[in-house]
Amino acid sequence: MTSFDIPKWYDLHTHFRQGEVLSAYIKAHLDMGCAGALAMPNTKPPTAAIFEANEGKYWSIERYRRDLLNAGADKFGELIIPLYLTKDTSINMIQSGAKSGHLKACKYYPPHGTTGAEFGAPLSEYIENGVLKAMEDEGVILCIHGEQHALGPDKYFDRNTNAEELFYQEDMPQLRDKFPNLKIVCEHITTKIAVDFVEESNANIVATITPQHLLYTIGDLIQGLKYHLYCLPVLKHCEDRAALQKAATSTQNTKFFAGTDSAPHAVKATECGCAAGCFTGGIAPQLYAMSFELAGLDLANASSQEIFKNFLCLNGANFYNLPIPQETFTLVKQPSKLEPLQTPNGEIIPLPLGLGLKTLPWSIKL
Image (cartoon, rainbow, N blue to C red; front, side):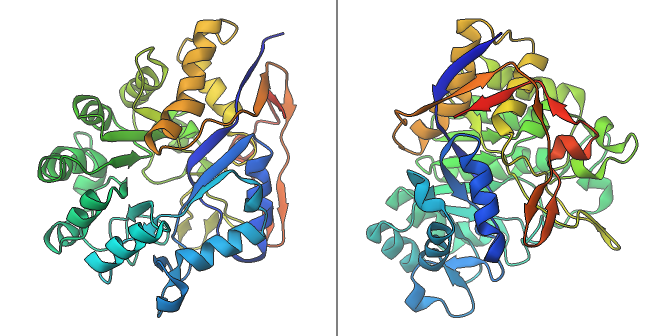
């Protein structure tokens, strides 16, 4: 039976939501060996202030951190909450937040581009108003949802292009050239064009990849309309998945790492559409192991285990300058049963269970 030990890891892109459900989602992450997390700030209202004294119409990083710690995140070694960039974000906020130690990263959402993104502003505004220059000067990391906004259907997802490809062909080269020292995480990339952009850029530009984008394609989503697979950016094509797999499983990989974008929804399909986000809390290492096997790696081999450890445990921690945990957990090639997560808001269906899988081929031992 294949089994191997690896350090506890950081999920460097996840959604914990807010309110009484927080503890259930945090526990799911603790149960899968997480030593910490980067918690997305698309709360309601968004976490777009830094200090509680200056909240106004927004929540603050101080407030959201306190709520997360009280709900069980105090068991994490590290917790990063990015500042949600809005039209009200100022140079002074970046400078004072960085100097206080509260501000480690900022999150760019394309306006109306995904769940809770209605407060975002066009990227050009942050270039012109000095916010990105202040981030570069203060060493604050930019976490970026890399899709072009305000596109019609013919460009948003077409045979020859899509919103992510346009963003990495048009916007990101300009951003990279204008702010060469700005550290950027290209979050949840889905296309070969995004992979190529990250690989050809300097060490300041890296990317997270989700389990679902390593495992599935747009064909998996639309054949039978498996709405539990609906997330943003939407799944892409076989050549895109192959590029993601190649990047993640390369022996030379230092720039691609785990960020699940786990996004729980008690009601996934609604009358007006489908909530974007796949819930992979509690099972992400197992899913990543499955994706590495799908890419052709034999995780019974020590060399493949080392590649997996780099992707899951080391690359992201090194980029965010987080300590590598001494505590380890074990991945075992042994079936594990899938169950809905019970929360005060109702059942949350893990992605594989929503696709009809009752078990996974891998288990975790903490």
